Image (tube, rainbow, N blue to C red; front, side):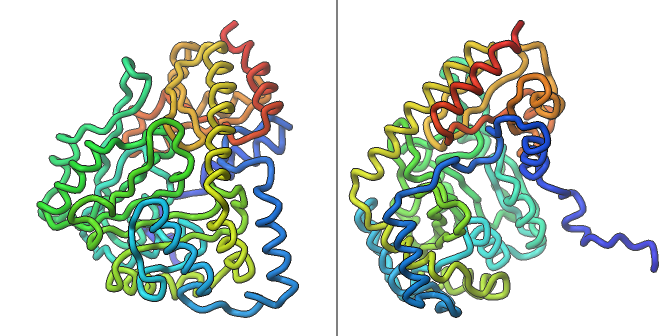
Length: 392
């Protein structure tokens, strides 16, 4: 065999994800895993029973339709209309995917040519960088900057505008934002929309945390003037209904954009999650009270872990959305978040994720560490107790 590397050079910079490494560390040490973002309880019983019923009734046990089962596509369209007054044709403007991760990959593979630039908010979910690389694109990060005065991360709109060049094909936007918990404001989104229209850009929006907005409100970019026809909106069921293993996501956009994304998606998974699609169709029709209770529960969990992390000596950034808290480890005498996270299970019996893995600019992300609070209250309380000794 020759000396040519086995791994495609586009993926050479991507190894095993940090989520796998830290979850394995949690298992090996018995530490509380506040790293990977999955709940430790299942979602609504009626949704789980809907999946069981679909299995028993033979719904989705064979290949479902390529765009997704009609019941789910109609439910997604109804959801967009009910929540945001966005009208989509379930037959031509909705596509069901294997979670949002596939939707992101398919969108970028479909819409990005080699050499195109993709502007993305940094820090960013790790699949963004890999998907841009697979498409042959060039990622152009625009950092959300920490604001000590408000204990949040904010977007510099001038920096965003300066990042757009004649080679820019699209903006990849994530709000509510993982890992910082930032929820872009109406003014910020309006500025993004104005820029996209002015420069004739496509925008792919990752809105999987749309129902996990704890302060303010989620505003889909597609609802802004001029954006319906140039936005690919992505969401999924995992975060909203706490069935992350089902991997049911979706895309809504114009017929032309959905067709383009479907052209790439059909050669990834083709189809997936047949019986679960029927269950998620029922989940999307849960009453508004479900979403209110979800937010109330997460607000209480945010307070519980925020207070614990503050007491332990971390610098804490209060998230407005998602179920992640970003912290600064420098008040504890550390500067390297990766090293800190690798030793944290042995020191305190808790696992977290270093934010540096979400940055191209490793120095900028180095002092920040992310904790997930989508866990039982007793687990969060125990984690806070374990972390309490770090500052001593």
